[in-house]
Every structure is written in structure tokens, then in C-alpha cells.
Length: 158
Image 1 (cartoon, rainbow, N blue to C red):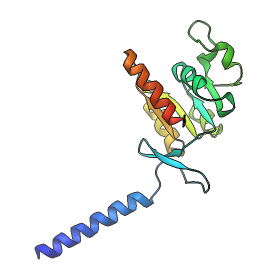
Image 2 (image 1 turned 60 degrees about the vertical axis):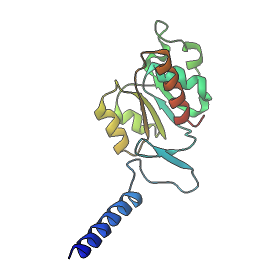
Image 3 (image 1 turned 30 degrees about the vertical axis):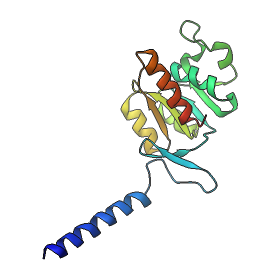
């Protein structure tokens, strides 16, 4: 009896694990011909081409890492001389976003950069819509800032 129970449990576990591997990742369907890698519990393109940044910190890091052609939109603060270090460079990207999920989804990004200060509901809504969202912590030390830069570089494939 114990052996049968153990076998049944192992079979149930195997079915559960296979269902998780073969099901949707939460980031939408995988497209043929694109390379993907594991990212925050799901999949994202290895080299995203339609990136949206939701905050000034990500705007500044992103513009230092990728060409403007890969950026769909920056945060509305990218043009603010009082807090932005990238006002001139940011002029190459015409769109600015607010924290409106419909606006962001309409842009069809393959990656959104966010911070932990963005509303969790917004991040989850974007993920539910099949969009990969990279959320980074707010750095408080130089080492943490360096980590955010490296993590962002990894997220954008650079």
C-alpha cells in the first residue's frame, strides 16, 4: 500500500511540474524565431527592441545602455531640468508615459522598466497583459546603485 501511495504521489508531482513547464509563463505567448530567457518568473526576449521606462532613474540608465531606436517611451520626468540628467538626449525619444496601464499596453513594449515604488497593481496588470516587467529596488548605497545598473543591463540584453 505504501509503495502504491508513493508511486501515485511521484506521478502527481511529475504531472504538476510538467504542467508548470509547458503552460503560459505569464508573459504571453512565445514567438517563433525569437530568443527568450528566464526573467522574474517568466520569459522575456533576450534582446528587447521596444522598451518603456516608467521612472527617471531607469530613463537615465537606459539611455546610457541602449540606442534610442530601442526605446519606445520614457517617463514624463525625462524632460525636467530640475531632476533629469538626460534632457538633451531624451529629446530623441518623443513619447512620455504616465502610470496608465492602458497607455503602456497600447505601446506594445517587449520590456518595461520599473522600480519598487511603482504600484504593484500596475506591474501585475502589465504582466497579466503579457509584458515582461523588470522591477528594481531603490538603491541607497553606491554598491546598490551599481547592482541596479548591472541588473538593468542584463534585462535589456547589454
